[in-house]
Length: 316
Image (tube, rainbow, N blue to C red; front, side, top):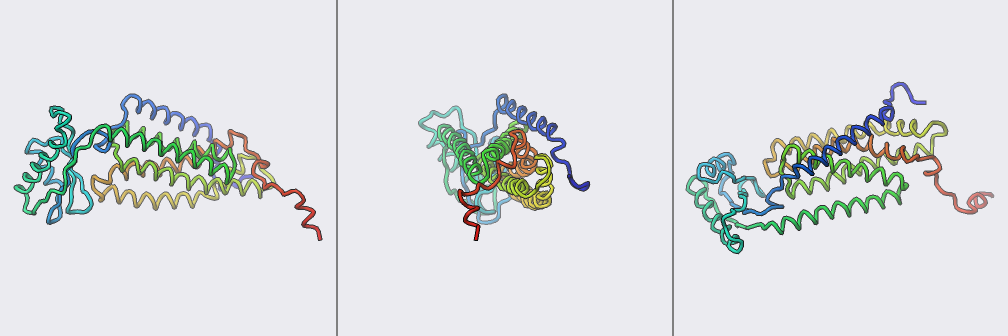
């Protein structure tokens, strides 16, 4: 029986399943209706890289560009506090074959403008045109990479634990990624390559938490002589709760620091990981564990198979 001080996580498993289902449905609807606000990494546009002789003040650069007809320009830190990247959307009035040369002209123009309005010396590092085709290829390869990662994870969990655990782990990971993408779609947060990298990091973080919980569940199923599967899962979750909360809390401290002082370059990355850590902590408790209970995991599923003749070999 469960001790009085333990939390009955699985007592609300049906409510948690309903909440997760609702969040996933809302996320899919948002992605279908609004899609994602893709950044320049996935769309067409011009990227201008500049270097300053002194530390750059981004607000001053933004003000200079805004007052000189570059209202749509986005300025982000690039590499160090003396380098920036100015991102501009594609100019629809430029012919397709002239876009690369137009990007070079835009780079020269912006570099000259910022040199005139800054006490620092501004050097143009490069000016590139990013085509929509490249963006489509990046999106396809990123999506394919996540699917391959989920498939490999499913095989790994099935081999290390049991097939029912692999289904629960992959369901939790898919749950985390879909909800994170849904929040980005609902709030119109820019989705770029940094955000895609954050999604892959979310998969790794959530998987680590899920494996810790799954390992304790397997151990308790083998060790505890009495108790229902729900009780054994509850005991396992309570035993790993302090580790889960401490890990999530310390990770969030770092991520909020990155969000607040990391600049615009890392904002999408930090936001995605913050959402992923919160949702991943929840899913390791209420999605992965819930799935294995719905699949009727038993003690027999997790017992170590005895080799034929092992008992005879143990005799003197």
